[in-house]
Length: 218
Length: 218
DNA sequence: ACAAAAGTGTTAAATGTACACCCATGT
DNA sequence: ACATGGGTGTACATTTAACACTTTTGT
Image (cartoon, rainbow over all chains, first blue to last red; front, top):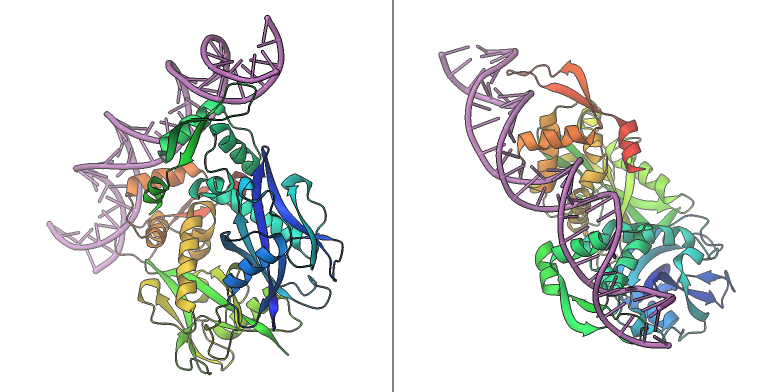
């Protein structure tokens, strides 16, 4: 039994130095054939947080991702069949965990595909607005959240971390100052491991020290 | 014609050195006789932003206040008659503008009253949770928003400004450092006017220089 | 040997923090 | 004269910002 509101999922990842967002090609009216954020109706007897996880899974194949509320949209004209309120959620996933798994398990959606955030087409409903709000939130919280670490491989190089900062902030940063700042934060664990498979000097790998991070913000 | 979701308004002000929140005593079931945030059903053909302004007015008498979206709540048990989704908004008003005007114009609510944020009773629905989220948002944004200036008289003393910072952050601040920091921001206009009606040395008044503030954050 | 990215320090400026006393006003 | 809050400066520590070259590795 369907409820009278929907949830939408704004799912970001990071791959090849670019910030990406996961979109579905719709197979259902309205907006059939358009690209849209994964989203659907919440069931009558289902908590919204359960629904958003279920729907993320059904439309993308991704499980156990951490979704955080972003905004509610209720414009009278946002949906052609009359006002359908939607609550948008936002999540960050590691590309390596999911690269082969982004495939809808319902046929409401034809496919799921990663788009560079700078190359997103015109989307269904008000989804371009939601994306914009999501990017702003990402930017606001960059320094106070583990967002960058949820989106990177568990072991990452400082250059990868810097690329995320640059992609999210939309500006380039000084390498030395960036590294100094990150070390001073004290929650990066320097590993005795190095990148492999690159044709140049392999970079050292780092991990987030979650304990220290939490201590800092509690 | 009523819609199937509500909006709630979290309205803050500042008076006598304290941060206050505006609550209604309910005259309707459910939660008749309880205190609650001003809130009600959105009309079917009404934009949510219009609704929140209308409802704020009907339940408190306040007009033309700037409300910003805070969070959507949709717990299955939040409303005794089944899930009613609500979108909570947040506003800041000047006590001097409104002190004699907080009076409901509907009889859904018996009265509207300012509560010290530290002395709020158990509220209807999940309104205590919403209040907590609102206070956190206030704190997060304190340095990047005009919140403190919307809540103060247009002409204010530095001590009043400091009291807001202290109330919102929940800690005391050093007077000299606070004043130095505020002057350095460059968007306070020092007036040639002074407090009146106090039985001690009258403090100089200041205004927010909106132009300079906007330049700084755009 | 070349291409590609990794890695590394210093200096100057700006900002933040700790701290205590005299001043002006109304009663 | 006293009670009350208004108003002020200095020294030190920390953080930020600008800036360029050498090292390592794979091909």
